[in-house]
Length: 348
Ligand SMILES: Cc1ncc(C[n+]2csc(CCOP(=O)(O)OP(=O)(O)O)c2C)c(N)n1
Ligand code: SF4
Ligand SMILES: [Mg+2]
Image (tube, rainbow, N blue to C red; front, side, top):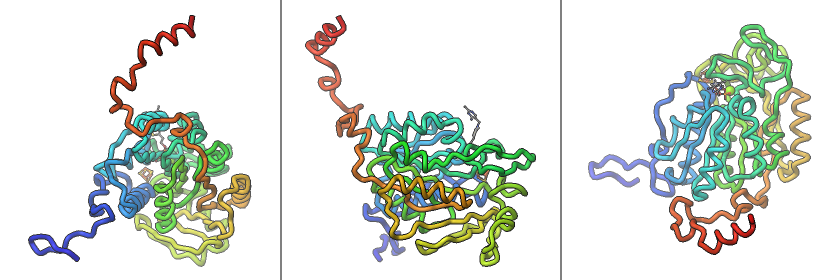
């Protein structure tokens, strides 16, 4: 290892010569043990490992605890905290304006599937190059835990209100609409999420990752489908799982092809069923079928469900120039007299 002039060992650097510190953000203000914090850590790790220049990244978000989280990673990157549910349109403008940027959208299940569903669906159908992460806890954490549109049917709020609507599966929706890389992970599965994020950085097109991210403050009560007790009552393999104390980060590793029960630090558990190794992630019909089957069995399927590396992106479709629009000279962006004349004649 090399050393500094003072003799202290130089920090380890990545392939572009930056230490991991250059990928960090501000100190989190989210609850200790919130799944969103673990996702931020995985983003830091994967960006560092992939050697992405921080200034190439634009972080985009809406409103919510999840949407606050870009403040807690990659301080050197560009950032835009938009209005609730409106991040997709801001992201579209930013990426169209400069296609050299690496867009990283961080949203919540409320931000994307409730108030923002209209913007979400149009982003997915355009295949804009962006990594779009939904930090999915089934509730509006920031406004004290109301159901979002991804909440499970029959789950109960602390107030006793029962959710009588079926959840929107954002992965099935994204696959149906045209996103070219779609997957689901769990904030506690370090290895899987880390690997999926690295693949996402390398992908050209819309990457939609729904990451189950427990809300330790509002999702651990009797009647919640995420609570420890609910899972204990419904899952036989509970006894094989060690209890993980609240506020401790957990890491799980498991082989593809297995189904495992995961006890989360908020006391709730998820059943994570990995896709088997011979699963064909290019078959979108099979992907949606598998997601629906998993729902019927109350299982949470994780992994890369669908990937299409050949789909044209929104930038291709619009034939966008490589040069950032703001730097184009007037001679290029201003139509000449003849062009204006032609337009006038066409209108006449
Ligand atoms: C236009 C508008 N409507 C409602 C709100 C109130 N509000 C703030 S955050 C939020 C929901 C956030 O939920 P989610 O996106 O799931 O994020 P989480 O806090 O769970 O991470 C709501 C309804 C708002 N800020 N703006
Ligand atoms: S309220 Fe829930 S979602 Fe918000 S920071 Fe706390 S644990 Fe996370
Ligand atoms: Mg939420």
